[in-house]
Image (cartoon, rainbow, N blue to C red; front, side):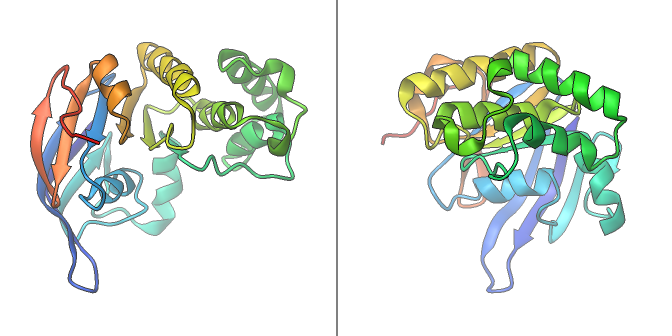
Amino acid sequence: MIEMQDVWKTYPDGTHALRGITVKVDSNEFVYVVGPSGAGKSTFMKLIYREERPTKGHIFVDSFNLAKLKKRKIPYLRRNIGVIFQDFRLLPKLTVAENVAFAMEVIEAPTKLIRRRTVEVLDLVGLKDKRSSYPSQLSGGEQQRVAIARAIVNNPAVIVADEPTGNLDPETSMGIMRLLEEINLRGTTIVMATHNRDIVNSMRKRVIAIEDGTIVRDQLRGDYGYED
């Protein structure tokens, strides 16, 4: 599903964000990516959905070779990947339903399908009754649920979640994690970067730890492994 082979990422100032990363994530896995700030986690995530390009090495997501992927092909890759951010990134002038539908409109999905899928995913995330609300009228947890609905509306094979609970209180965070776990059980691969020790330790999944641009630990049913 996702495979990195000897991947390096070096920025123009000479910073080595990643150093020879080799890792494979299979279909339907749920993987936490942990490590200190500045370790390379965000770069690792951005490489998966081709926000960044590797300096060296190969990255495969399904049938796409991201190291050789031309710019015009990136939208096709992203139809298979849903991305969830810490700061939600909702469009403030669109309603909840319009924010979710927008992800289907950009790939020119049929109008009837957009309407049906929008209702389905908002029901799944528990926000069917908020479809006419605007982001400013929602709590942080509700906004993140809208962001999740938008990420899954096109039935992606992979979800990349970069600190999705970073701005949420503990109780809301656990609700978001239960939702992501349900989505994973429905067949979606999830790769999630997090600093939340309690979530990682309570929901034992595979843990990949990155330090100084290298993978230092890769455990099935792992724990967080760092002190606050």
